[in-house]
Image 1 (cartoon, rainbow, N blue to C red):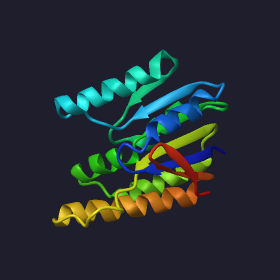
Image 2: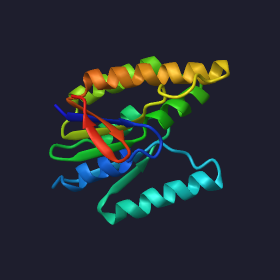
Image 3: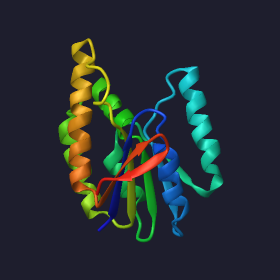
Image 4: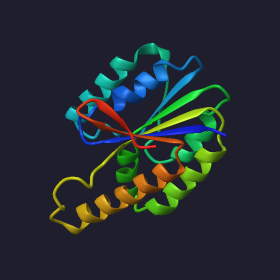
Length: 169
């Protein structure tokens, strides 16, 4: 069974960097599953910055929707998989009109059965103001439920604040 870590935090809290440091300390193979889509130039620049920071020591899989099959294909005994990020995956699912709760349940079930180490990075979106539109409120609620489910399924959970990890579990 995989050892699973959930790394939560707000925007620019140091989530990805912390998760990458966990992976860098791991001696086995490292796979980065990227869920982002470069929909505009600014997002493409963010993706490039993440890629440059990781360097060549990683195998990278870009998968905006089919996360569970990508995990199953990449998982191996002694390996480390970093999924960055759950929140972007959820937004991709929402835009594709897929059942986010069912997909997260499948993800939690798969995580329990896979070999190696898994690290999920996710944004905590519930600490700010209430969105002013139904779609924003729906997304915030679904992301909150997803984070709860992943935290329950994870062996460890860490909350990042200003680049500092706070161990939750």
